[in-house]
Length: 114
Length: 116
Image 1 (cartoon, rainbow over the protein chains, first blue to last red):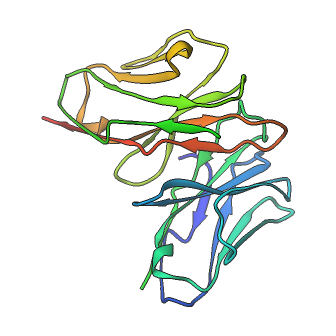
Image 2 (cartoon, rainbow over the protein chains, first blue to last red):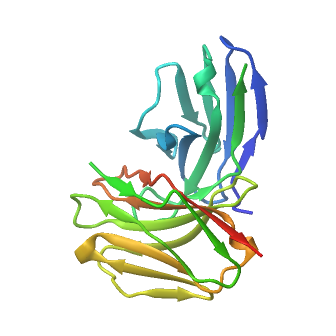
């Protein structure tokens, strides 16, 4: 158990809908990352937050947004969902943003868009 | 730009065989970190090891060992006497960058299948 909690574990929704994925980082970790894992794109970095502030953006679509709250949990919002958004979404946390700190991953949320 | 290449898409071995997973990286950063993660069939990503660019000492942890060679930009992972429980997808990752924003760049993964 990595200590990173993601809910829900599975989500099935229809095209055009909006969903929210939630992540609770490990105790003491200030940095949260979101990754998308799909068969054709592999593990893609979406966005990083540190202590409530956005620090880095990757290949995140405009239909997607995220935030980190004062209690350090994070939410990833996906809207106007398309079939191609079906993927495993991972949240990871680390104690800092320094590159020498390993990131610990949650179990992921498997999103299926039908 | 950073890039991690895991040329082996899938490897099958019989239990007790040794197996090496290759990882080649590209980066312009002088300071960077390399990681290996394991993704078992259950789906979670499990951290295995971190290595910084200034430390080329090989590392051994039980049946696992890692060989970092800066000259060839490689960070290979060897499992000795493989077991069925080692069956998983293994990802090599690179973390570099400047300032306070540094993402993990992953390779495409190598699926290891260990059979009896």
